[in-house]
Image: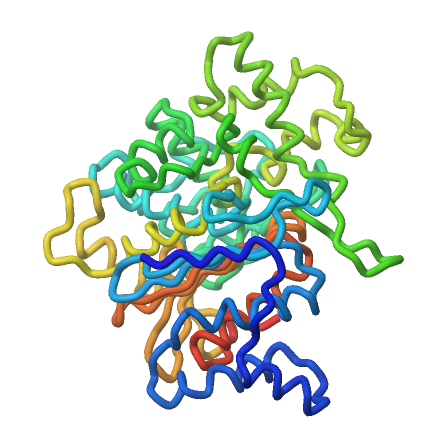
Length: 432
């Protein structure tokens, strides 16, 4: 595997990038990426990853993006890892291949993989109503919700909103299960609680056992750990008065994590073993927050599923290389190890379970699917608080993929440019 780590602004550019700028063309990430990627569409192959290192500095500059990391997968293995910019503008620490990013909603496919494995082990029934195990006491008593299954959740067909919003937010389902697609982190968190209830095991411990450790994802966790505290990059927003990136004043998981550690020490139970019930108890006894923005949040708000972690819907933190190792699990292998999904379960995750509104998009189990000129690709995007933006793209047929992590508010624009640069296509899934 090739590692290309650019810790500060690189000085080199390819002639094509210099020429585009010299011509005085209005800078468009999409159009410039298309120029750079022309060869890719001609030969229907993703171009050499070295192009990332040439284009990244300008892409980052235009979008006031402090840092990013990218992994390229080729022929079923992680071929190269690229790191650019700063982990924190406050400290000047660089992004390296050891940097851990909040993967945000890229957490969902990893959790979905574990749920599919639990179904194979007959520890959970994909088609049994979740309400048979747990019906949250803050859910409305609605017949459609009592029909929701794990399969509905993984396909985003539960009818629940993404998150309820404020305390007391509306959780009335918008349609019967499986009849439409509606993205829902709320539903994933419900499924997490069902899994914890059925297995008596906390989310991170479960994920480490079923997926993360067997896959060699050593710098990955859904919880808060000393390793995460040391290596997780800061998220950044934009100072509207200057247009310059700054460390975001509210980074909830980091703030809560520091206080989780103190509670865990008193309990003698590491955060990695906590269930949602443990989190609720810990929040009730945590000391006051020195961060005024966290202190302003009442206990009921901190307990909302969208703010809670460990969280199957969005609390995974990992290196870009670790996530690329997970993507490789979605490729066919002749004789999968016992811990991996069977071929039938793996392929089921990448088959249409529900249609979306866009004609080229559909939902698999844990993945989004897009029909491209080169066949069907799987994908997922991520956004935690507008300060961590991520994207993953895979082509199961050709055993190739991309993983992009960023730590800035405009990381989604960088994602769009990089996807076009490397694939030669403008994808609906990666369009800003």
